[in-house]
Image (cartoon, rainbow, N blue to C red; front, side, top):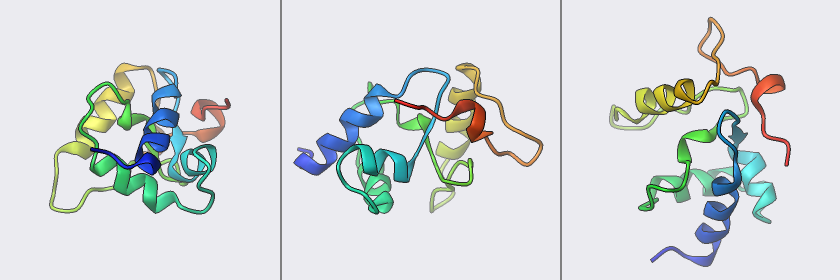
Amino acid sequence: MASSTYRHIYAVVYQIPKGQVATYGQVAALAGLPGRARQVGYALSALNDPSVPWHRVINAKGEISLRSGGSAGDELQRLRLEEEGVGFDSHGRIPLHIYRWRP
């Protein structure tokens, strides 16, 4: 069972609309956890609920954060974002000025 901290994080991530992204730090701040971006990463890696759109959370550089162990999650995340209309530049970054969620 997820801790209340993780549930707060998931509640924020669940609100990110299709075609938009949020950074780990942005999610942390909106969940009442400013400065705890890593906690968001830990929560998302522990996620067991497929309805939470984890793929919409990226790092502050506009990049997909690579997973340890050579997971296929990186490619899956990009594919899901592209399916939602999120664009990537020639360096594999998402232009945050276009796609960042502004609640």
